[in-house]
Image (cartoon, rainbow, N blue to C red; front, side):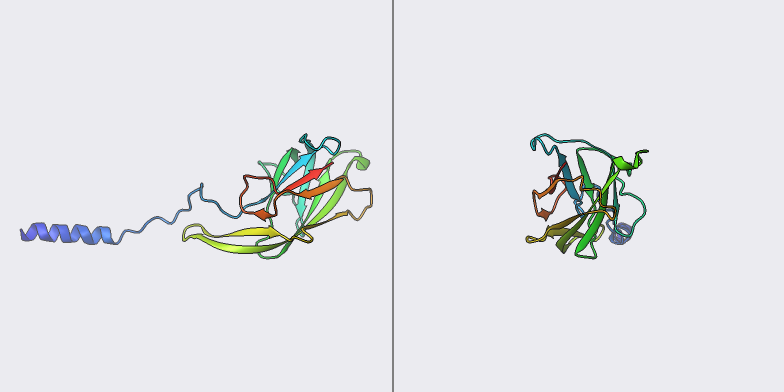
Length: 173
């Protein structure tokens, strides 16, 4: 009886020191990116594919990687906003790498927002949710070389950026 008690005591002591692994599950929602969809300016209900679009964040030299490439060709892109500032500025370069310099066009968009940090878990840490400024959610300008804006109309679809399951911004060109 004494041996059984000692064995159970030792077993209970051994398992009492185990901790849950601190691994953040890949399915746990984290800080969402800003989802941008592109549309045809002549028919606003038709998504339009951008070709060889490069998006470069302020102070960066390399483009944002989306689906494994920094050259985007598609109708939707997701870009990260700064979690330590209330503004993020990006250069949107259309037809990047085209041998004809006249075909390349750059627009700049500065996003203004507020942010709120939420504790997710000990393993995942915090996530930041964003709300675009209701009065001036963005400022859209042409690049230093004034060649006309390639983005003809920019519209906020959803100003609360809480998930990546919906479009937040629509760009018509």
